[in-house]
Image (tube, rainbow, N blue to C red; front, side, top):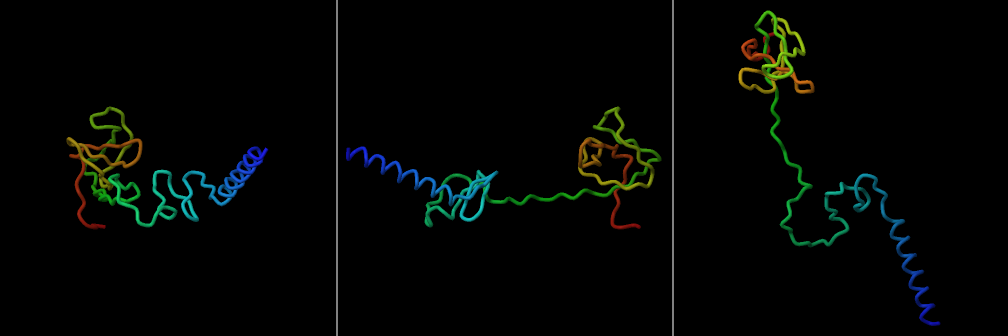
Length: 137
């Protein structure tokens, strides 16, 4: 009889402790709880962990890496008519540009210039363009 009563007491204590822990845990929809807030699932919470933890050999995914931002170059249409294509050497036209119009060139490849940074891509023949230096307005 004593064993049965102690088992019931142990179950009651464990149920109460689990519900108490869950009531204090933050409800994070997309991430996981960390301290008083939420963090991404792949990040490590260092608030609740040991203060002096040894460094690991795993790469730190939470470090933000800076990338070099490449700004587009400004070109001007020098041909009377220039038809943009969906890809270099493509027959499908995506736009029409007139002489004097300015466009941004993001990349060049084999005599072609990509003038759209979004989808669908637009490409112009590089010999129909001339770079613009400074503000000649």
